[in-house]
Image 1 (cartoon, chains in turn yellow, blue):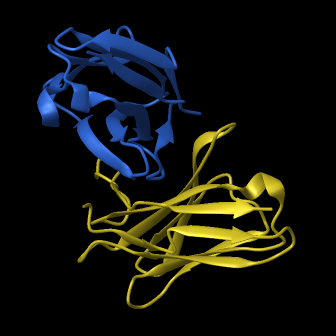
Image 2: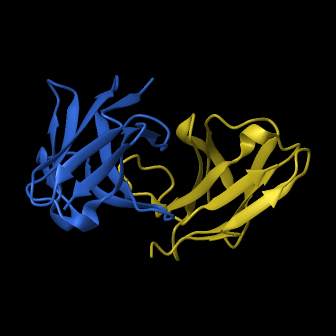
Length: 115
Length: 114
């Protein structure tokens, strides 16, 4: 158990809908990262938040947005969902605000299925 | 831009045999390198990482990896495979001079034959 929690574990929804994925980092960790894992794209970095502020963006679609709240939990919002958004979404956390050498601790993931 | 190539999407070894999973990276700055393991229906767990210093890095579960700058490689090895090692393994690189994001290889699925 990494100490990172993600809810829900599974989400099934329809095209065009909007969903929210939630992540709670390990106790004391200030950084939260979101990754998408799909069969065709592999594991892709989406976005990084540190102590409530966006630090880096990766291959995140404009239909997707994220935020980190004062209690440090984070939410990833996916809207106007398409079939291709079906994937496993991971959240990871690390203690610092951007040390590239830091270990990122991954949650169990949320499996999103868009029908 | 950084990239990671894992040679072999599937590797199969016998129980007790040497495990060798290959990873080559591309980076314009000194890289930080990581190996993660993913068991079915679970998240990623760090096996080991290289940041600076000793180029032979020991990790959990008997795994180790050697950073070879001249070969831009970071291959993962284990002397004797165990059935419990069956999983997907991901090599990743992060940029020591830039944003803290991990760039992952495509993964190698390791199968252990009894």
